Length: 161
Image 1 (tube, rainbow, N blue to C red):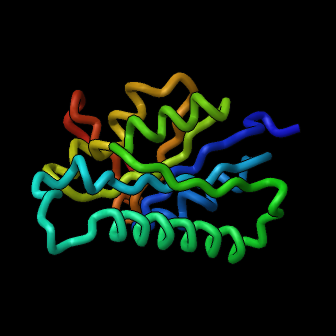
Image 2: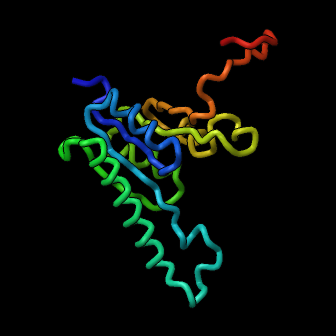
């Protein structure tokens, strides 16, 4: 039996998504592939504009995400009995943590982006919030731009390789 029997793999379809899934599969027993779609009705202040059908846009986003998750699972030849595909709606970090709790995930795996204000202090806002809120271990897969870079020991003022 795997040490982490149920693993939640939060995927945002960025450059790091494939690496994140591969890292989880290397240690996984059963995986839940999750993508969180922003709630258009709460994230956009002008949701009452009559020209745009926000509910149709939301449904399209959900269906595209589900299709991408199923494709990722098929590309990796995952056994349908060992994978669950889910798309949730809402703020990414809180939905990832909620889903993990509801499905008794033993580990959350997600990628870091490597962009933003000072690389968003290395982690990224979603990763940072998941780390702070999760009740199970969280594994972060670094963005490719972080790999093979020397590590600075700022306390000693030197660079380690």
